[in-house]
Length: 495
Ligand SMILES: [Zn+2]
Image (cartoon, rainbow, N blue to C red):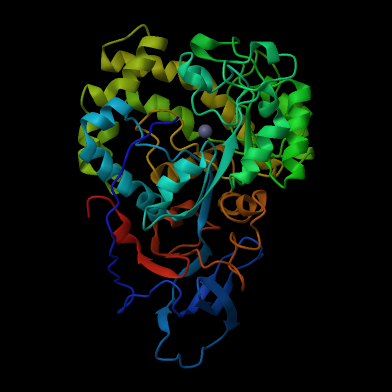
């Protein structure tokens, strides 16, 4: 999804109720009497004192702390848990979910208010790190202008010519802004005008991605679904081999969009690092377990992304926009707009494409439930199968996966966790997937993802233990972002 819009960012002042004074970035901070829950530890570390300076944890000591210097801000962590901030390794940060460019143009104030809230909503549910799997340096620069936002990384996305996802855009517009498009060997004669095939080999594209400062390479194995079913070109084995070799030589992991059994098998055969979706599609009667066993054996990172299809289903639920949790992460003006005819554009699009334009709300909801049931069940089963075998899960939500309003920033991650528990993952598996495993997938495990001396101070203070219950993520008291202390309530929309 690439929906551009110009957002105006206002300076953000943060009121603090935990502290009596504002803690500036880089100042000294100490958290006393706290219970540390960190994914590399087998048990919580009680009664610890955590010293933070210049955005980082400098040391952790046990027992009662000495009197702090007057310049140090002290938080009493008694009765609280301290965990690393969460990382969502599959988000899309461009634009406002559910708003097409013409909507942004027609309602600039609604869009600007929403853009300002989105990074805060991720922080509200504990996400201090985000990986945008489809971005560019320009889009990242726009996002980085937010004064208060999670640390953000991006992947360079490498569709093959006329493959997913560029096929959503008609020719020739689809070739605009495609610096990382791959022209496969043998297809050079069909290259679009203005494209030099030599500059669009996997090796040349990876070099550009690396130079642009990306953290990973994203590839797509999507033969097509819906109206495009089995009509789209996919990367051939020689393309994938060259792409993965070049990426690994540049120190970049390769994420693959793959949500069918055929695609996940191609991912295993090619040796990608991460499969960026759960398993929705398989030929009737096909047994997915042999491919899932190979995913476990090869230690490939796997993102269940269970909420993606719920995000398509939920737009048919007439009560969805009345869910009071939405008002904590979305501005009221945006929720009101979603109720309008314009705001229902994506719902109407799916209804037209899948349910013959069914107009009756209840009939549409029933048709949608019946339509998505088998995909949801297949993914739930695959997730449970991999959870029982302790596969390498990476927490990624694909927020938002489409122009839907039903993958709301931050909240979508928390709901995804509840879906993952339903599917068989333990809170401890989810906690590790969203912290250390995601950090390690990007080679950042010495920077973030655990509570240890030397790590960046992206931390959460919570009333419950996140390794024991995912309810803990709605019991966050304080978000600490690079040493800066933020009261959670101040991050909510419609305060
Ligand atoms: Zn995605």
